[in-house]
Amino acid sequence: MARNVLVLGASYGSLLATKLLMAGHNVTLVCRKKTADLINGDGTEVRIKLSDEPNHRAIFSRDLSGKLDATPPDQVNLSRYDLVALAMQEPQYTDGAIRVLMAGIAEAGLPCLSIMNMPPLAYLKRIPALEAMDLQKAYTDAGVWEPFEPGLVSLCSPDPQAFRPPEEAANVLHVGLPTNFKAAAFADPVHNRILRELASDIDAVTLDGRDVPVKLRVFDSLFVPLAKWSMLLTGNYRCITPQEPRSIRDAVHHDLKLSQSIYEHVDAIARRLGADTTDQVPFAKYAKAAESLLQPSSAARAIASGAPVIERVDLLVKLISHELGMPNAAIDHTVDLVTQKLSDTMVADGSSAP
Picture (cartoon, rainbow, N blue to C red):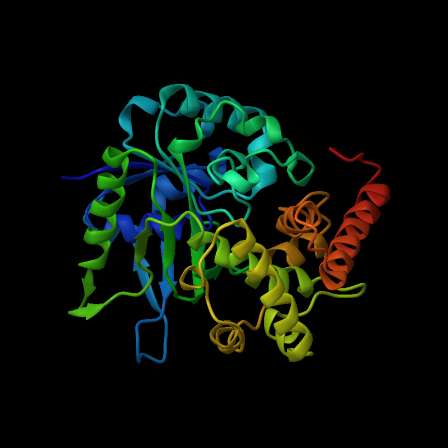
């Protein structure tokens, strides 16, 4: 049975969309009108490397069995969809039209699978140790998430690394690290059947008889997606420096001992919240993967390009660590640096903090 999935965000979201299209499901990408017109005319192109192949394959949506369309947020008909995937950067949900759409999604009671680095606040309310913590300061506008029933919101660890090549059109995505999306289950078994059905269909896809990487894995534990926090705090946010941004590889491997201490401290925070060691990724495995991450993180690139706001998982983890009585000087330093860089940007362009 072909499912209809609404994906908010046509950049990173096109990776999950392509996997769904290959499995025979239908996808609508929500994006700006100019990008929607491009996608509706030319489709999408996702470049991904198959195992043991030296070069990336270009996968075009027009060649796939599922149907793809794209639309601006004010033209979405929510009655069409079985599932919503949230693939925008967290600050983008404060846009007026997106905010209205989000309110409609919440009212419709549609299950939402987030593939953001920043976990929706509604998802965190599913974790008893976080439910009563005041974490709103980490969000651009926490009010976006107030209408959502926590059990209808799940979270993926967006481990695949992908980016839009700056010289390419907005419908092209290059996958640098083709790892898996690791999703926590929903509260409702009906929604979990949809999620596991999609995962199974994606798993069965082949290309020229060969397996295609980037799977959707579903876990009962709410803490599996939190394994990404250690990676973000060790690599992604430490790409941000007082000068120019550095690659994730350099952020991790410049001082491997310090990196390991940060990584293991964030892992320890997750365990205090209820995670098991089996929910987590060993540092050695992450450090090995980081060797191939030769670009700065999206957060670092955004700050370098003058963005006044970014996703603040770094600040979220700091707030949680202090609430638990587990502060860490290296994490606090990273948060202070990111905050200062964003403040400098806002002063330079005359804007004010959200």
